[in-house]
Length: 84
Image (tube, rainbow, N blue to C red):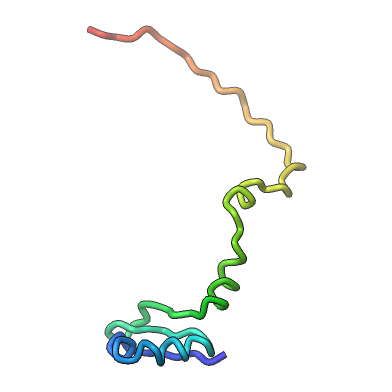
Protein backbone atom coordinates (compact mmCIF):
# COMPACT_ATOMS: atom_id res chain seq x y z
CA UNK A 1 0.00 0.00 0.00
CA UNK A 2 1.52 3.28 -1.12
CA UNK A 3 0.81 6.43 0.86
CA UNK A 4 0.84 9.69 -1.11
CA UNK A 5 0.93 13.22 0.28
CA UNK A 6 -0.15 16.20 -1.83
CA UNK A 7 -0.56 19.87 -1.07
CA UNK A 8 -4.01 21.34 -1.71
CA UNK A 9 -2.55 23.20 -4.66
CA UNK A 10 -1.08 20.04 -6.21
CA UNK A 11 -4.37 18.24 -5.65
CA UNK A 12 -6.30 21.03 -7.40
CA UNK A 13 -3.90 20.97 -10.34
CA UNK A 14 -3.97 17.18 -10.79
CA UNK A 15 -7.13 15.64 -9.34
CA UNK A 16 -7.01 12.73 -11.79
CA UNK A 17 -3.46 11.91 -10.65
CA UNK A 18 -4.67 11.97 -7.04
CA UNK A 19 -7.48 9.56 -7.91
CA UNK A 20 -4.99 7.18 -9.56
CA UNK A 21 -2.77 7.38 -6.48
CA UNK A 22 -5.78 6.62 -4.24
CA UNK A 23 -6.18 3.28 -6.04
CA UNK A 24 -2.77 2.32 -4.63
CA UNK A 25 -3.33 3.68 -1.11
CA UNK A 26 -4.51 6.70 0.86
CA UNK A 27 -3.73 10.20 -0.41
CA UNK A 28 -3.15 12.78 2.30
CA UNK A 29 -4.00 16.32 1.23
CA UNK A 30 -2.30 19.05 3.23
CA UNK A 31 -3.19 22.67 3.97
CA UNK A 32 -0.16 24.76 4.90
CA UNK A 33 1.87 21.61 5.48
CA UNK A 34 -0.60 19.94 7.86
CA UNK A 35 -2.75 16.94 6.86
CA UNK A 36 -6.32 18.16 6.32
CA UNK A 37 -8.06 15.52 4.18
CA UNK A 38 -7.64 11.94 3.05
CA UNK A 39 -8.68 10.61 -0.36
CA UNK A 40 -9.52 6.88 -0.45
CA UNK A 41 -10.75 4.50 -3.11
CA UNK A 42 -14.33 3.38 -2.51
CA UNK A 43 -13.09 -0.13 -1.72
CA UNK A 44 -10.76 1.16 1.00
CA UNK A 45 -13.52 3.38 2.38
CA UNK A 46 -16.04 0.52 2.54
CA UNK A 47 -13.48 -1.73 4.19
CA UNK A 48 -12.84 1.01 6.76
CA UNK A 49 -16.48 1.70 7.67
CA UNK A 50 -17.87 -1.80 7.19
CA UNK A 51 -20.32 -3.07 4.66
CA UNK A 52 -23.57 -1.21 5.09
CA UNK A 53 -24.59 -1.98 8.65
CA UNK A 54 -28.04 -0.62 9.29
CA UNK A 55 -28.69 1.48 12.36
CA UNK A 56 -31.38 -0.97 13.50
CA UNK A 57 -28.86 -3.82 13.37
CA UNK A 58 -26.35 -1.80 15.36
CA UNK A 59 -28.93 -0.83 17.99
CA UNK A 60 -30.36 -4.35 18.36
CA UNK A 61 -27.34 -5.51 20.38
CA UNK A 62 -28.25 -9.23 20.32
CA UNK A 63 -25.25 -10.16 22.48
CA UNK A 64 -26.67 -8.26 25.46
CA UNK A 65 -29.69 -10.53 26.05
CA UNK A 66 -27.91 -12.21 28.97
CA UNK A 67 -27.09 -8.92 30.75
CA UNK A 68 -29.00 -8.45 34.00
CA UNK A 69 -30.53 -4.99 34.12
CA UNK A 70 -32.91 -4.09 36.94
CA UNK A 71 -33.04 -0.30 37.27
CA UNK A 72 -34.59 1.18 40.42
CA UNK A 73 -38.15 2.42 40.15
CA UNK A 74 -38.37 6.17 39.58
CA UNK A 75 -40.14 8.09 42.31
CA UNK A 76 -41.88 11.19 40.98
CA UNK A 77 -43.51 13.50 43.48
CA UNK A 78 -46.18 15.79 42.07
CA UNK A 79 -47.44 19.02 43.47
CA UNK A 80 -50.08 21.55 42.57
CA UNK A 81 -49.11 24.17 40.03
CA UNK A 82 -48.39 27.65 41.37
CA UNK A 83 -50.19 29.95 38.92
CA UNK A 84 -50.17 33.19 40.84
